[in-house]
Structures are given as C-alpha cells and as structure tokens.
Length: 426
Length: 154
Ligand SMILES: Cc1cc2nc3c(=O)[nH]c(=O)nc-3n(C[C@H](O)[C@H](O)[C@H](O)COP(=O)(O)O)c2cc1C
Ligand code: SF4
Image 1: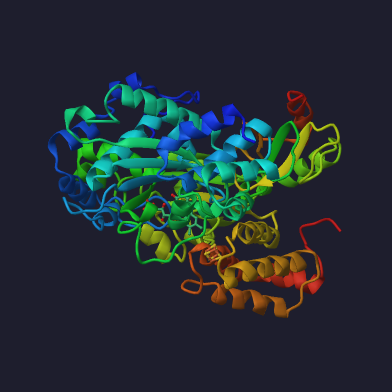
Image 2: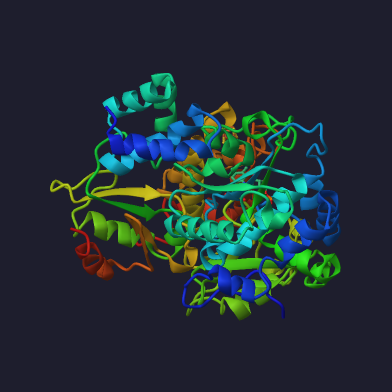
C-alpha cells in the first residue's frame, strides 16, 4: 500500500531535512511544474486528479484555484495561504505532516502558488504549534538556500516569498475569511461571501486558502500524475487520507490509508478496537463539528460521498470515539462548551444561541433538566442550522447535537426523568 | 516605551507584512515575549509606534486568547479541555492540578510560579490528556505523573 504523504515521516519524531527529502524524490514535483508546465496545466492536472480539500468542506482543489484571475491584467500581488490552524477538536493530522516532513508542505505550497501565480505565501500556524512552526522556519531557510523559494525559482523567472505566521489564538481563525482578517491584524471575524477570497482576499487581492494536508498531496500528484493519484483510493474518490482515532480506543493515532477505507477497518485494525471492557457507542467521524455515526454505519467507506450518505461528514477524517461508559450528555456539554466559547460573537444566533445550548446541557447533566428542554435543543438545531448564521461555525456546532438527540435521545430523557446523570456515582 | 530590542524585533517582522496594521498582532506577541504579558502602557506604546488607534489595538488584543492582558506567572500551563482529552481523563488531571498541586484555573500561584488556563484541543489527541507547559507538550497525563512534571519548572 502506498503512503505518499507519510512515507518520509520517521517513527522517532525527528524531522526530515532537505537532503533526505530530495533523496526520497522531493522537489521533483515542483521541478516538473515550474520547469515544464504552464500554470494552467498545473491546475488542470490537479483538477483531473480529483483532489478535494482536506480542511473539512471537501471543495475540489483545482476548481477552487480556477476562480483566481490570471494573465497580465490580473491584480497583483496574489496570495496563497496554507491553513495550519488545526483547532478542530479531535484533529491532529496537520501537526504530524508539518513536524515530520515540512518540506512536503513547502513544495506543495510552491506548486499551488505557481499555479495561481502568487507572489507571496503564508503558512498560518496556530500559536500552540511551536515545534511545527520552528521546523517550518528551518525548512524554508533550507529551501531558499537551494533555490526552491525566493527569487527566480530554479532559474524559471518565477519568484515566491514564503512566510510563517503564528496565530494569536481562537478557533475561528481556521475559517478562511476570519483567517485573512487575522493576517491583516484585525479581529478574526469571518467576512461575507461573495466576494470569495480568490477574487478579493488578503488585503483585497486574489487569494487561495488551502489546508495543509491538501497542499501536501500536490508534490506527489505533479510527480506521478493524476491517474496514479486516483488509483490510490478504494472508492474512486482519489488519493489517500490521513485518518485518526482518539478517545478510549486501544491505540489512538493517525494513519495514512487509501481514501474510502471503512470506519470498521480504521477502528478495529488500526486503532485496535476499544479499550478493555468498553463498547463502541458512537463516532464523530471528522472532528467535533460532524454528526455522530453509530454501530450500523461501521462499514461505511470513509470518503466524502459515503459519509454524507450515512448522514455525517468526512470533515477532517480524524474521528472521536464515544464508549458505553461515558455519558453522551456530558460529552455534548463538553463539545458545546467549546463551540460557545469559540463563537466570534459577530452574529446573534450563534453568540447567544450557543451559550444557551450549553446551559441547557449543563442543566440536564446536573439533574435540573425539564422535558421541554429537549424541544428547546431540537429548536436550536434548526435556528443555528445551515444558512441561519454568518459562517459555518454554528451549523458545525449543531451537527453533533442533532445526531446525539437522534441516537442517544433515551440517555437525555433518562437524565431528565431521574434528575441525575446515570453515569455518575450518586 | 518600547525597548530597543522590542523595536528591532518588530522591524524584523515588518517586511513580511503589507502594512503597519498587520504588524500590530506581531508587535503585541513580541511585547509579550519580552514582558510576559501586555500592560496598558506597552499596548499604547505599540499603537503609537505603529501609528494605529489604541482602541483598535485594544480590540485586537482582547480578541485573541494567546495574548495576555493581565500579569501571568513564570510558567504558563495550558491544559486541553476539548473532547478527546476529556474522554481520556482530563477532569481527574484538572482536579489534581487544582487540588494537591495548589493551582487555580485561570489564576496564578502566590509564588508567581505557574499560571493555569484551559486551551481548546492542542492537536495531540492520540496522547490525551495533554497540556502545554510553556513550549513543552506533555501527555498522556495521569494525576500521579504531575508532580515530577511540574518539578521541572522553577
Ligand atoms: C469554524 C471553522 C473553523 C475551521 N478551521 C479550519 C482549520 O483549522 N483548518 C483548515 O484547514 N480549515 C478549517 N476550516 C475550513 C476553512 O474555512 C477552509 O474551508 C479550508 O481551509 C479550505 O481548505 P481546503 O479547500 O484545502 O480544504 C474551518 C472552517 C470553519 C467554519
Ligand atoms: S456563526 Fe458564530 S463564529 Fe460564525 S460569524 Fe456568526 S458569531 Fe461568528
């Protein structure tokens, strides 16, 4: 089984320097792109490869780039941003990629930047990722030294400045337009779309924001072709995916597997099943803001379409496992506390609705719940659903809630009926 | 007043950004690196130095959770309180930190040694429960392992 994204990543946690990266075939994709392809041809290959964004929404990458104005009349400078904010609870894949193989991201960014003809690129790294940021800085210096970044890359006439920006915090910075405001030195409030960043992004200039894992696929697609990339997946949905599992499983971790590997295989073979004596109750398949899946969904292939058909989202592909000795209501309280705290406060339904949801869950968990509280929670899943708020934060917060109310309703009702949490010793 | 070192560090960042406004967050981070936190007079000095309205910079400083507008201890402990760590025993770790180790959530110890805060998911969910002590990521934590870990920070 091929594992292009993690092939260089060492089990001892050490990083790969530029010599080792080149030895393993690194920077061939960039040489290929810059040396023999026009920008539009790079975009076409990426479109043909079927690569879809790994940041959560799964937008086709080539198609995203195709909205960037090109040619001599295009506004300049243009920008490329790698979204390395990775604050979605339960998600720990971009850290692995940046720590273990920083040149892969740099090469991917140089390819993307060349395709859209960006002059400047930023890696937007969350502030707590000290080691990834340090390793990226080091790797950027190495890449500049070998002519892969900077002026006149590989003698082609194309130039790119690549900077690391470390964030000052807050989950909402991961939302791509909030991220742009953060980079501009403002409060990280999402922007209205349209205009989309490709037309008017950073400082009003054409900008593409892509996730770290998305970008890391590019060197391989360019070096080995769109057909090879498609053939990596099990279900035709292109490429590999870094899947992860956390919670009370035997071996929490992250693994690069063919896109479309089943939930069961990931949980049973790679995560080693549940810890002793525990049973699986539910899974958030792609981070905190995805709907629960349950036992009947275990044979779902983990790709965009199949997970959507099962009623959830692939999201970040890093799953959070709920076991049968953990209270689902308490878990939801933890999740909604996070979402309420991280609301940027811009629009009222989210700013006021999420704390309300949290306090209702608090009441239910503490034995103060009333039967009508369930109706209130149901109502919120509609009031804060897609299209009702300025950005996808609030709808994301409703995904675990609406599915918990569906699959674990009996647990909520029992808390209310018995005026206590059955999982806690009384 | 900004120190010459602070000014030098700010100007080193300047070429990476298009304008002085974008430099504001960088400058606040630099001040915090030098002073531990961002006192009012330092915020005002940054605003004046960059030619930004003070209210704008104040609004920015209070938005981001990694910027401190209050004094903090010599070491910052950021305990992850998100779902994967919660599932794997974060609450018992939190109780031990606040109980036998005498820390308070959101507060600083009387000797100025530690400030304890929570932080959303640290992206180390396979090692939960985890915390970040200054720049060091530690986990999986158990209540018993906290003593020796804290002992490394004076
Ligand atoms: C509240 C919120 C938080 C987000 N956080 C992240 C994040 O940390 N990393 C990320 O890559 N995308 C995040 N996204 C998605 C981005 O807005 C954007 O879709 C993504 O970076 C695009 O990259 P892709 O096309 O390569 O997937 C977030 C979205 C929302 C609504
Ligand atoms: S939905 Fe929430 S996070 Fe998004 S803009 Fe509105 S208040 Fe901010």
